Image 1: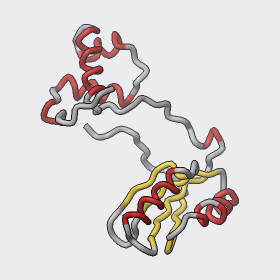
Image 2 (image 1 turned 180 degrees about the vertical axis):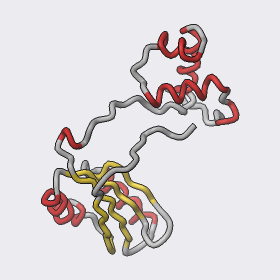
Image 3 (image 1 turned 90 degrees about the vertical axis):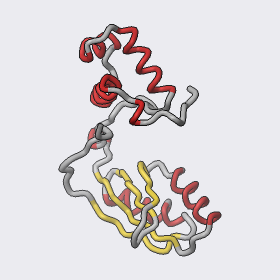
Image 4 (image 1 turned 30 degrees about the vertical axis):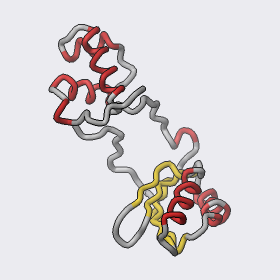
Length: 161
């Protein structure tokens, strides 16, 4: 879908914000079910949702999978510092990290580290193998500092609206 770059929070009305909250909570609702929750008929709700999609405010729809139930028992946050900082080296690092399936999120950050990776694996043995065989092959990593999640207190995919 074509995206409209000039669409922003100021262009959203109360109904649009309600739609976004509803869809973030449950995107499987029918247009009719959503319409009843915002007190509109199905057609204007459908048109509003399409407009939000075309504007790129709604990027995609996805199923949220329970990591533990599919054997991803260990979540690790890994802070990475690069040895050198050039455009080419940074681009190569990003390309390499994006290709690693265990890395589910990657952020370029400020402060003592250059990148923050969220890594999901089966267990500590899998993480050890990942660090040696996958992350170890990524060029220009100066240091990696791992923090292991021992319990999740709050986990939310929704953007606060």
